[in-house]
Image 1 (cartoon, one colour):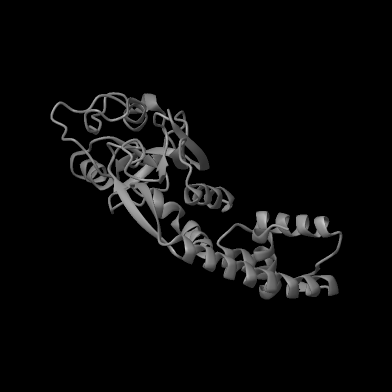
Image 2: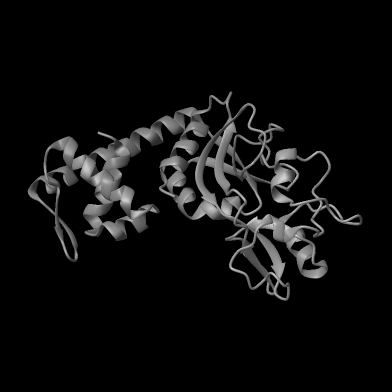
Amino acid sequence: MDLRVLRYFVAVAEERHVGRAADRLHMAQPPLSRAMRGLEDELGATLFERTPKGVTLTDAGTALYDEAVALLAQAGRIRDRVTAAAGAATLTVGTLADAAEQVGARLVPLFREQHPHVDVRVHEADLADPTAGLRAGLVDVALTRTPFDRAGIGVHVLRPVRVGVVLRDGDPLAGRTEVTTADLAGRRWIRLPDGTDPRWVAYWTGGPPGDDAPVMRTIQECLQAVLWNGTAAFAPVDQPLPAGLRVVPVADRPASELVVAWPKTARSPLVRGFVRIAAEAGW
């Protein structure tokens, strides 16, 4: 049996409620429910009695709980011995803008639970490097957004995010529920650093920058350029904003994707584990 599913089962058994167990596991409720039904199917036994207030263990569920707790404890001891024998391990995670914040609440506790002895180091890249250090070999794995040149890079999509244009509150388009790219014609756009991936530049800017537009390297610099100078910029619709700005969705612009990315040549078990945990987190 899958140890991960057994951990899920123990959480549900102890919480007596699938929703509370999902919160404890930092995952969504539907995949947890599916995992429990799959475990029952695999064992050919009903493990839970479903009630309006939650769940209770059947006799079969109680037997599995006792065995699962013992098995997970033994698995933990095995992991500790192997980790001690292998020595210290380090994983460098690249992030771009707020990508790590978007997934950290779920990913960090799940990774730390399975790899408590790993020293995780974080490298924050600026807008000139959408691979967040992967292309330059500075990081082992990255949390970032698309689009960028994927040559030599593996990508798993965590979730798509709609994109909008950042506007000042007093902008004529600010009261709209959505706009189109045609509505934005003639605006002055932010300038990204020279040499930035052309796919990235074309996606996050809707036209040529102003003649005197300074180079923007961070999200906050872009937002302040909109706030102070009325420069146009795209951003995810869930981007936190300073007072005086809002994001209006752009109807005809494809969504960006929040992704975990890694070098295709990577052989590290830690990289594979990080990607697997991110993929299974239930975004």
